Image 1 (cartoon, one colour):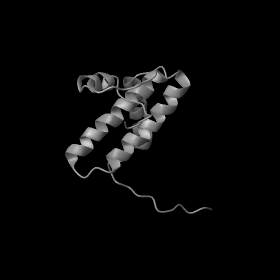
Image 2 (spheres, rainbow, N blue to C red):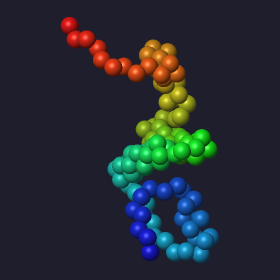
Image 3 (spheres, rainbow, N blue to C red):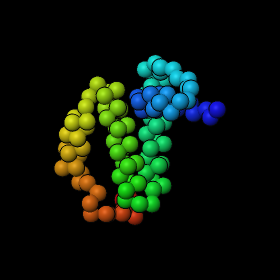
Length: 108
């Protein structure tokens, strides 16, 4: 039996059960939950980085966004508040649309 030891989406146990398989789960405490969410964010981002098609990239970006929703909720906020902060930062510092790659800055 494969061992996963990772945070999964809420309906995964139900999907496994419908497939006629047995599984073992546990409910994480808050400290474990945030640690696993952070690990999951890296996992999902790595999956995005390794995509080769636009379709796969969008699927993985949706997974990254789901993690961002969960992280915002964990921190007592919402994706709407995160978006407002993103907009303020973009207004002040810009986004990434111009594809600027900084090489160096001269020190005085």
